[in-house]
Image (tube, rainbow, N blue to C red):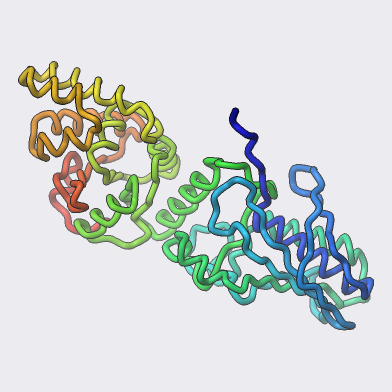
Length: 365
């Protein structure tokens, strides 16, 4: 029996809880071990506070993020908040510190130069702290400073640097809750990466299904780093997003097994249904009138990779797969100029298909 997967909390929710806990200790001048927070969904959650300390001028604590059963580089991270009261205009100041990234490229949810604390977490922090300090003397306002001691090291395992977030992690989340094994983290990242590419005036983007195919594309094509988007298995979603955002062309970089799935019209190129892919490949081989012995080899192969190694990159069946993949891409993003970069299992470019630009130009515009 499959166990029920456990939900967790976003970095934004943890930051807001830590800020509320620090605000309560500053106001009450006593230790607090927990803080209750109302999430954007309307639900309430209680967070354990750690590292509490306070005096007359400031208070601080941290919340350890529990991402539930969702694999996440931020799982277990300690999100610190310090709250003080300062002379300033407005109703609250929210700053970053050690391990919080800064935005250096346009196209993200916050402007260039700002701390990478997204709008919903900012609102959650503001509401939580102002709940504790609903009124203060004139020109006296709360100041919240967030930090993550190992944020810069953890950020090195993310796409933050490519997106233009330098120096640490982002404080993210729209609901406060992380759903286990959710696709939303991927699709949210894809949306942001495409927005950054648009803001950098990239007319085309290079989509890759994994790190190997991305590295091959970077070696084969000149272009700004913003143009390279690692979409993983989310082929249909990414192409639809490219269409929504008005890109003039897409280059898709993939190895043969993923290309077969795209040619089969699969919206999501996970490894499931590999046998069905091979059956379809055998049918295409029959349509081409290929040798019966080869068709049998395809039918009894273990993987599409095995078929590719047998055929080689220049085989007519590889051409047929590429044509079908290009046709499917064209239907997802009509009016664009699609191209394919086929990557061999040695990690290097094997062939190019489609877009005349891909053959005529050397730089991704």
